[in-house]
Figure 1 (cartoon, rainbow, N blue to C red):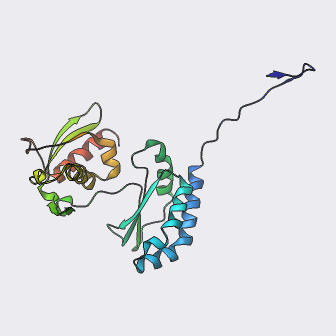
Figure 2: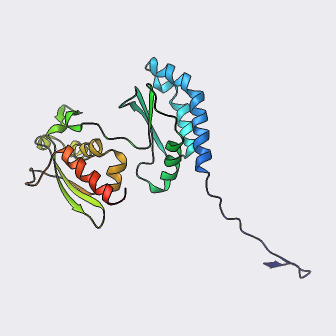
Figure 3: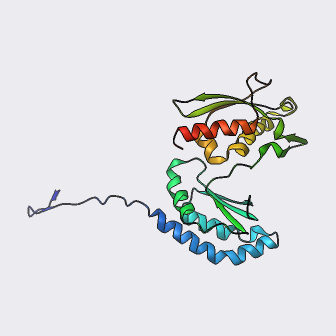
Length: 221
């Protein structure tokens, strides 16, 4: 309270910062998405997605400026729109509301709030410079920390010795992201290391995914 020269006291109330209305922001996004769809579909049909990238970027930024988006090939639909918090828990209320308000998947579009797992990563081959590497040859050593709800991993591929340091790092994390998807990897991976030789207790990517999904289930994920 502050007193003036006449002895009158004025009480100033500090207004609490209002919580964002995540549902309203999500609704505004999908309204704008409906408006953009004809232009977007035309641009993708012409293989010119850059024509609409600025418009879509503005639309995602209006939801929250720190969110990331990509347009990818869908698993069930032709295209997938991914709007991701990239593991930032402060942004998840925005992506949760966004996905909850999303229209049903169609033959053309599906929607994800994180980069999804590849259905069968063992069938994927990646190009790293001059190297073509089959993820089916990746082996993973997994150490489960049930108290922390995470898995520490070592990743091995028989051709890692051929790669430079940057490619080795990519080949360490890429199989994990492809196997688990962005959200599960962010939630349940602890320490991640590259193995120079195949660990004695290594398992394949599909068995590794089953292990992490079970841990996530038990941890209430």
